[in-house]
Amino acid sequence: MDFDVVIIGSGPAGGMAAVQCAEAGLKTVLLEKVDLPRRKVCAGGVVKRAIQLLPNDLDYPIESVCDTVELRLHDPETSFKEHREDLVTMVDRAKFDYSIIQYAEKKGAQIFDGVEVKSVQPHENHVEIVTAEKTYTTAYLILAEGANARIANCFWDDDRVLAPALESEVMLPPEKLAEFQGIARFDFDVISSGYTWVFPKKDHISVGIGHFSTKKAGLNKIFDAYKQQLGLTGEYEERNRKGYVIPIKPRQAPYMKQRMILVGDAAGFADPITAEGFTYALKSGIEAGNAIVKGNNPDEVFELYHEAIKEDVVQELNVISKLSKPFYFSQKIRKILFKRYGERLCRGMANVIEGKQTYHKALSKHDFIARLVLGSN
Ligand SMILES: Cc1cc2nc3c(=O)[nH]c(=O)nc-3n(C[C@H](O)[C@H](O)[C@H](O)COP(=O)(O)OP(=O)(O)OC[C@H]3O[C@@H](n4cnc5c(N)ncnc54)[C@H](O)[C@@H]3O)c2cc1C
Image 1 (cartoon, helix red, strand yellow):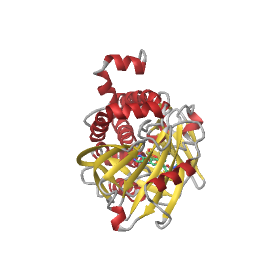
Image 2 (tube, rainbow, N blue to C red):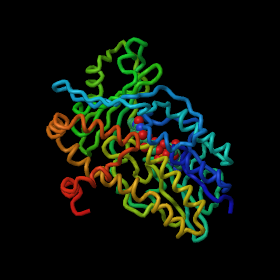
Image 3 (cartoon, rainbow, N blue to C red):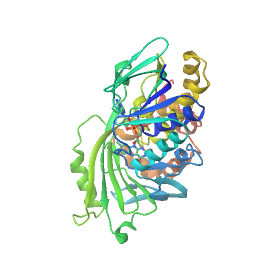
Image 4 (cartoon, helix red, strand yellow):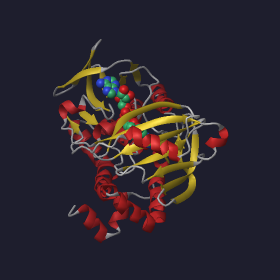
C-alpha cells in the first residue's frame, strides 16, 4: 500500500483533512489538479464559527475584518445591521487555502500539485487512484474535489442542487472603499431567488450574486444593474468576473462508500440560504480525517464520520434547505418578512455566524413553525 490516506482537492475541506491525518502520523498525500496556490471563484468571507475550526497556530493573510453584517432591501430603502467583534474575516482564497496546505505539509502531508486524478477503483482492502503519470494505492480516499465532483459522481447519485453564482473584484480608491469597509453586506431584493453581496477587501470589494433557483435569471445583466445601484461606474476597474456553482442541497447519505469519504462541496455541504461553505468544508474535512485516524476498520470509520457530522452538518443543512424554499420562493413574502422581522433575522444571522446558534436548535424552540416548515421530520 502506497499511502494510508489520499485526498483529492486542496480546498479547505481537503486541506483540513490532510492536517488531521498527517498530524496523527498517517502516511498522507493530497493531490491537486492545478498548480498551487490556485485561484477559486469565491467572495472570501470566512465567518467567525469557521475561523474557530482552524488550528490556533495557523498563519494566514487577512484582507480585512468585518464587525458588522448588514441585510438590505432597496424598495423602499431598508437596512438592518448587527455589530459584533470579528463577525466575518475577509481573505484572498488562493492565499488562505494555500496557508492550510502549507500547514498540512509542515505536519507531514505530501502535497502533489498539478496532478489530476483521472479515475478511481475501489477494492475490498484498498483504493486505486489513477493519474496521468502514476497509479497510487491507499487504505482510504477522501473526495474533496469541490462542486464539480467528477470522481464522486461516478459512485454517488448527484442529487445535490447546484446554484449558479457570479463574483468579481471592483478596484476602489480609499475614499470610495471607505463606504464599504467593516461591513459584510447582503441585499435581498436585487434578484428574486437569491441575493447580492459586497465584501470589502484591502484595495477592492468583492461584488457578487447567488441565484438559488433552477430558472434562468440572466445573472450578468442583474449584476451590472447592481453595480449601478452601488455607484460603481465605469471609472472603477472590474477584474475577474467569473461564475461557478454552489451546492445548496446536500447529497443523500451515506457519505462513505467502499473506503471513499465525501467532504465539503463534493458532498453538497454548503448553506442553502447564504451559500456559506467554509464552516461545512472545514468541519467535514476535520471529521473525515479524525474518523480515519480513530477507526480500526472501514465500518468504524463509517460510524465515526456519520456520527460526527450528523447534527451540525447534515441535519443543519437539511433544515436550512427546507427553510430556504419559502424564503426564496417569493420576493413579496421576503419583503414582508424583512419588514416585520428584519432586526431579528439580522441578529439571528449574527448568532449563526458566531456559532452561538444553529437553525435546527432555533427552530426546535418553535414547535408550530418547525412542524409547518419541516413537516413530520
Ligand atoms: C461565487 C462564489 C462565492 C462564494 N463565497 C463564499 C464565501 O464568501 N464564504 C464561504 O464560506 N463560502 C463561499 N463560497 C462557497 C465556497 O467557495 C465552497 O463551499 C468551498 O470552496 C468548498 O470547499 P471544498 O474544499 O469542498 O472545495 P474547493 O475549494 O472547490 O476545492 C476543490 C479542489 O479540488 C480540486 N480538484 C477537483 N477535481 C480534481 C481531480 N480530479 N484531481 C485533483 N484535484 C481536483 C480543484 O482544483 C479544487 O482545488 C462561494 C462559492 C462561490 C461559487
